[in-house]
Length: 181
Image (cartoon, rainbow, N blue to C red; front, side):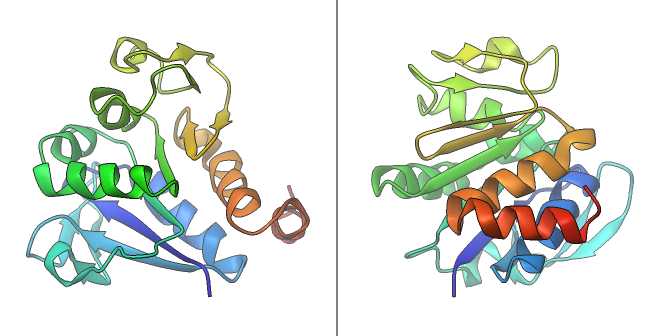
């Protein structure tokens, strides 16, 4: 079964994290939430508490089909401040596997140099953090193993782009139809 890890930091955007998990699971993808700390309880940007499936120390990212970063503030900053998160992303990228981020979280990928020469999108006002990328302002950008999304209202576009990349377009279309999109 395909496996995706969605990394949660305090202050994450709830719609982006949980919407993505929901869409991936509808597609038959094992979407696992991971607290980036040793505490499984993570508070969203709008104070919605979520119990992650795993803590960072419990997670084994070996062979993961994708690592996903939801945005939100200060969630994206907290992801960006985590050296273990950045190392996991670099390893994933070096192995040619998908790294994905939405809203403010593409800042993490930009800071790691993973967007150089690629098209990328993010929440308006964060374009300067897409270091080396061509910011497009599109809902979603898929450029090689890097997928970026614009923001919470576009979580369906983001999640379905992940499904298409991990499985295929037909599965993404099936999930979209089931969601009445």
